[in-house]
Image (cartoon, rainbow, N blue to C red; front, side, top):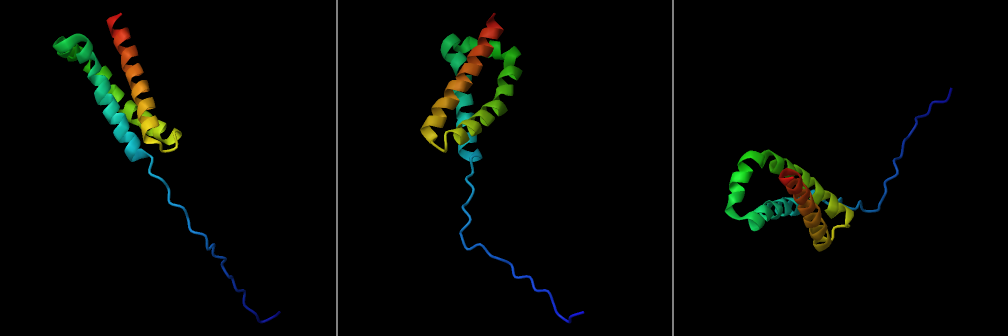
Length: 107
């Protein structure tokens, strides 16, 4: 038997590690702002009588808040970080969600 030691020499990669982009913050802000704008849509259509309508239907609209934030994050990440494109896509999708809900409630 030989009298020797095993040496382990780690190989270090000298390339810099690219930083991960935070997709969630701008997308979440866009999602929340689009939810607020879509929440104002019934006020533009029906006026102040919407408050009486919201008295019974607020859980439906409140449930769209986390969904709108997730849609904002997804659209921001799918658009590759382009803010204007993701804002337009998020606004359209959230407004479409609210429109479908309003049509379902008024039917």
